[in-house]
Amino acid sequence: MWDIVNMEVNGLTILVFLLAGIGTGIVNTLVGSGSLITLPIFVFMCGLPADVANGTNRIGVLVQSTVGFFAFKRQRPEFAKGNPWLALPCVLGAILGAWLATDLDAKTMNNFIGGLMVAMLGVLLINPKRWLKESQTSTLQDRKPLTLFIFFLIGVYAGFIQAGTGVFLIIALVMVAKYTLRETTGFKLLVVVLLSIPALIIFFLSGDVHIGWGLLMAMAQSIGALIAVRFVSKAPNATKWIYRILVFVILASAAKFLGIYDFLLSLFIVQ
Image (cartoon, rainbow, N blue to C red; front, side):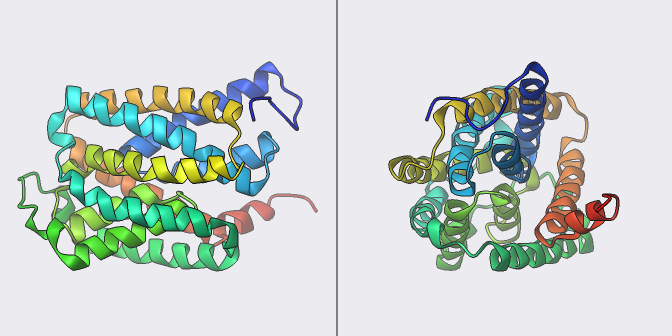
């Protein structure tokens, strides 16, 4: 589980791997869905089977989210507010999702997630002002049964495949739990940390984790997390930047899950 396998390692390969990891860490820290980058890298560049790539990916997610959360707590504590108990249904869901991951129907799941991403994009664009408000709101909504059930479902999904979890957490925190977009940025990282721990343990016990590649990716993603926190801390109108990046990531994610990206790419590849 430590060795670098199934590929001819060279300086350029490692450089591309690390740069992709840094970029993923930036995207994951700000909004999420960076696993759409890392999973193909683990499969096609590192030669890992899909199930091992899915498990290995959790190392970087866990480490990068931990680094990002504590960096926010130190530099911009207002970006990391929230009720930690809201993570409990996510953790329980993640345990179930990771346990069921071996039976994942990838095509059906991709179509469902892609359609959901399109719907979420509509929610984002119809009323942008709702997402850009800065005033702190009551978090009484995060104790309601419906809210807890929705976060349980997000946890189940996170246990399955992880990609897109950050986006769904942000949507749920703003639309259901009534958090501001600014408050979700760091707090979602805490939720991801807590739900990633049991999922990683389950994948590790099942032998679906490659420690060597996972730790290398975790190092790169942590650098990206620190860059993202510094950017948000220094950028004027940080909430607007987060909103813009969120819209872009949802567009890219929907295109990937629905196969639009692969279709467009095939048009430029000579058969």
